[in-house]
Image 1 (tube, rainbow, N blue to C red):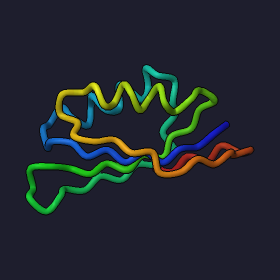
Image 2 (image 1 turned 30 degrees about the vertical axis):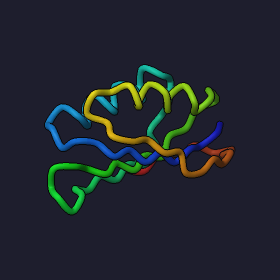
Image 3 (image 1 turned 45 degrees about the vertical axis):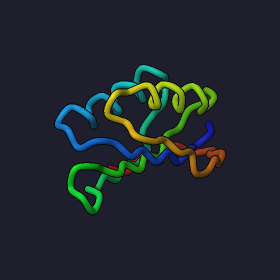
Image 4 (image 1 turned 90 degrees about the horizontal axis):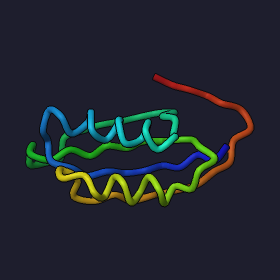
Length: 88
């Protein structure tokens, strides 16, 4: 399975995180780790996701970019894993 680190910058709305997580799940990706923090202006958030799937990450990238509250999406790294490790 391939792991990808995805960084999402979005507007800080209560439903934004829920929408991002729903897209990740519907596109067949599994969340291995997640970190979210508010940006300096407190109107935006930065979400770091480590996701795993055998599907191409481009599919997730394009769908996240289509969300209304998302300002930008960047894929940072790709690694292959032989064991599944989930951290909460």
